Length: 412
Image (cartoon, rainbow, N blue to C red; front, top):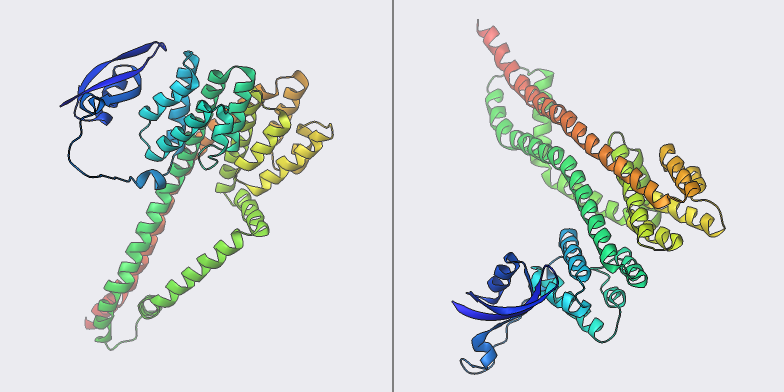
């Protein structure tokens, strides 16, 4: 076990230093974090003394830092901790140095090091982050810029962390709503394919020995099995071609617009998609306005994060009207894409000067409705899928048993 010397800050923002025993620099940082210390520099004593072991050059390249994805949860944790350090009065360069040692994601660590170097050279935090759009979105950069301009960067970062966390939770709700029916459907398809490919062809040989005409339901089952076994490659090619042309179509502006419109109209899930889109729109707008971002800039950012071209078009059109001096609620209502209660609350917010507060309340209400709808859908889909699978199995069982029962009756 080696001894590491460290420098850093405690939770109150006070500079601290000392030494810690650990079997590696990474574990030393983890040990310090558990003690409430944000390390900015961790150096092994032997390495600090300049000791050299071995000869030649030892180059190690960690390719994971270039390919590993930075998740929304990684970004939320980073933002929350950076808010704490900035709020404690720690200079930005030292706060970023502490976060470089704090984060576990290799790619994010590399990006933070580049951001720190640019800030150290005189750039603002927003300017340094703007060069990494694959990590820090326009929403993120604009909120940081607003926080730096207003002198309330720690407050804005905290709002940004809360916003990112809310979007992670919202995405998790959607995934939880879809994962069960998708898994059940895949299991059902696997069972059906197994029956048609492995079980029914063997039973067919038994039926061929009967020498009697088979019931229609049995002939239909055997016919489907023959098609699946004999032409499986055709199904594979058709599925691949359909996926290829669908992807090509949906990447065109017209195709994406029509597809997003359909996703808002499809039975059951259409309402859920609309709730999520409206919630994301209102939450983003509320967060930006609360952070001091001008309304036109905020609407431009909202249009890029709403993730639905139909809703995006409604926001862009409303933005044009706001530029001409009109209200926000009117064009959103005219678009027909926002529920009346939403546009009504926005209108009240505009009249009272509490627009950001009203938007936040709408987002809270719709998040709650998404929770309720996800629970209801899960409860509804479970018995429906079980009944569907049971119906398929019952059909196969009847088709197999019916000729056997007929032969038994003839034998008597």
